[in-house]
Length: 342
Image 1 (cartoon, helix red, strand yellow):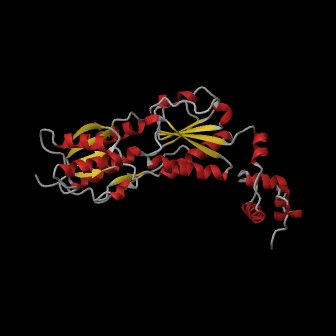
Image 2: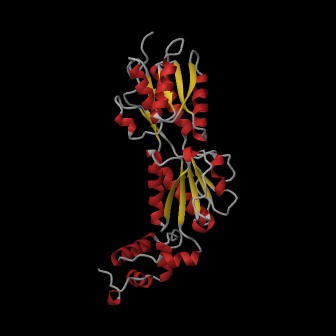
Image 3: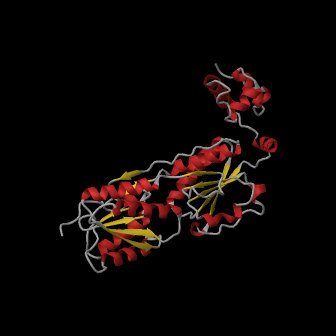
């Protein structure tokens, strides 16, 4: 049955929604404010949502904000706007925010090292909270010591300055990479490590060395590289031409570094993966644009953005956010194969 239309074609109100759904205005407020679970049945919540959709009802966010004393705005701080990973984090955060009547402002901090300047004249007056993705601890001094809740993504869990944290299981991702390469028969490794100081890269390095250090007859050398294709190519080329037996596997902290490593292999007249296997981390679009396609670790970027926004909303409502790490997945592709015979 079609819901009754508001009188005179006026903008529908919560009272109209309540009348159409056969419930109280308080119930409409609970359902459309996403606070109905445990207080309203799933069937009733569905009736309210259907009525609101049929009537074209939109809540008066300005009035709601005045009642709550909030701007309903979150700041997402990322190291760079040019990296696809952070664009996907933003997409995930913004999708959850939109369902709750929030907006998300995206703000880059140079290289994630900082310090990031307060982008507003008065952050506590302009924001409800801050989400920071893959940032160095000392890059967020502008937001510490305020009453703004800070949610850290992909960051050091020992940092006590944040209200909540959402992390990826990057250590397990590196373990999956090393297990894959060891099973193929590789024993001579170079770790092409990001030169950007970051907790997530430190975890990857520790996991790689812990895994390979437990295997007899394995050699591994760490070579730092700038987080760009040209710098990675140069670093990988030096590693491949260093004195001694040539490494058979280049384990890269990031897909961008892996792209540079693949270029270095080709410029030396070698082949991927017949002469040298290459792995990445992130599973950016770049990974399948390379030829051969890149073996890499898929990180659920949109999901970590969603969980970050969910954590901020939980903190703002006085609830404890979820604390489990998000799993990551190895994507074996054409850039890895058994090592060449000596």
